[in-house]
Each structure stands twice: as structure tokens, then as C-alpha cells.
Length: 180
Image 1 (tube, rainbow, N blue to C red):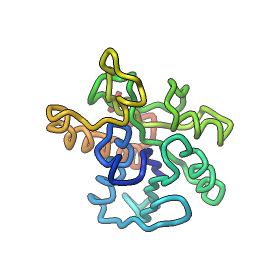
Image 2: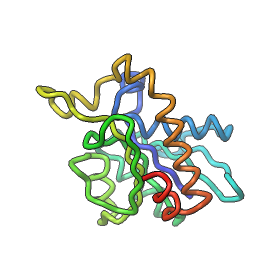
Image 3: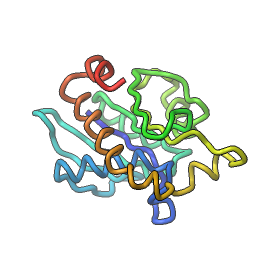
């Protein structure tokens, strides 16, 4: 299975709300003792979990162009995959698994949808909302978590990582029933 964690590369974006996908695959890599290596426009960690091949992928093309990397990886490896992404439409800390869905204005999901010419790909959405009144969407998603949010972040990332592992071991349907 291939897990694509979406985010933006570089120190400037490290703790941004928009980088939750990166944070989750980083937590998985640490838990499974996998190391990322550069491969094309991505950081990829390869290993296995519960007897199944596992790739963790962090596209380095920036959020708005994530689809290019996803398409490139999937053109060479037709494994099942899951996209891990932040979602401003979900309350902070809410986690939702979906087999498919729209982009809800998320540029990373839109890029994947455009490059794959499909919206029927599985995703794990992690809530970062609601956006405060008066904030531009891009300013909000590219801002860092507040101290109160940050104090909850490791628990949220842990729950999201556990959800990914559940998908790998039990499949999407069972995982959706347990997580949603």
C-alpha cells in the first residue's frame, strides 16, 4: 500500500496546518523505523507492516502540484493507496476516512483529481477548522497551530497514524466503520 501524505516542503511550512499529511507519514515512519530517501520529486520510505509492502510518500512538489507526484508514483506501482490530508471543513481534530469524494476546494486533492482524472481515490481527512472569520483561506492553512492546538497535535497525529495502520490491516470498509 502507498500512503501519500500531503504538505509543503521546507522549514517555513514545517508546523503549518496544511502539513498534517506530512506529519502523519513522519509519525508512521518513526513508529515503523523507516527512513525517507529522495526519489524524484518525493521523499519515500519503504518497508512493510503486518506482512504487507508499505510505501510512505511525501511529495516535494508543494501542495498545489501534489497530483504530479502521485500520478508518477502510481504509474510505476499500481498498489492500493491512501491520501492523508488536512481539511478546513472538518472541526479541529476530527478524522474521516472516505473511499472517494470531491475536493472541497482543497488544492492538493484538486491536483490529484486533475492528474488522475478521477475523484474516486481514498483519503484520510484530518480537521483543522473552522477557519476564523476574517482569515483568507490560504493564510489560515499556511499558519502554524495555536499553542492550545499544538498541545493536542501529537494525539491527533497518533490517531490518524493508527487509522492508516487499520486500513492496511483490516481494509477500508472496516477501518471506515471504526474511525468514522
